[in-house]
Length: 101
Ligand SMILES: [Zn+2]
Image (cartoon, rainbow, N blue to C red):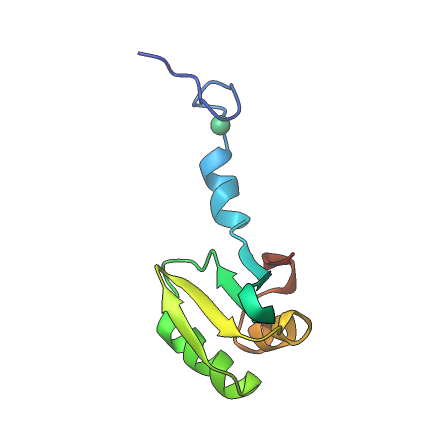
């Protein structure tokens, strides 16, 4: 019925939301402090072309830490926010794709 994009309010012919979403696919790295001072670093937003298990394996090896995969989100033990961007870059991701918060 409506040809208006719910996101940007433009006519769907003019809307670029989907294109932008693809180009600006962001890998979200965040640190979470769990109880008892346990810290984990999560890596989410990986594209569907990427095998998260492979990335997890690489990260665990390079950071020498434990980690698991939960619903497509990588959880690493410890705070690796400072090192992780460099490693993700080596794995072929672009720096402006990586959003560390
Ligand atoms: Zn739109």
